[in-house]
Length: 113
Image (cartoon, rainbow, N blue to C red; front, side):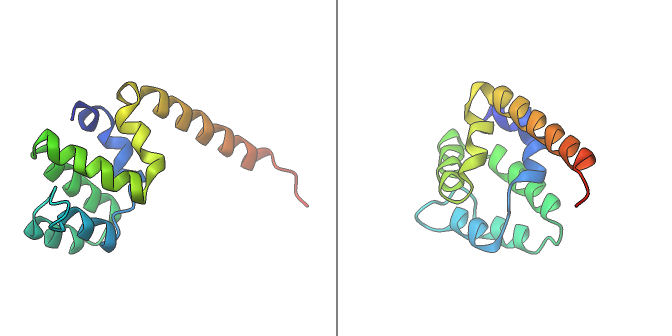
């Protein structure tokens, strides 16, 4: 759960809070958020705002619910799981920031064809 505090700001822009993902989180099989919380999230227009509300709801839940969230995330958006599990996400954040800055450099210096 500490990883949410450490890496929540990165997750705000990375999680895809689509209808199916949020609905699965509230499903009876998972139940890491309530159906009422799910309704609140899906009615928010901006994805970043959806993620902010989702992460607030998850942070208030139990460790077991956090683990359920990780399980659903691993099925739907597995590339984000290391951000929450690998040494608090520090390695993942560093890798992601390096890849992003290199990608930006490549775009700036790419030859025109």
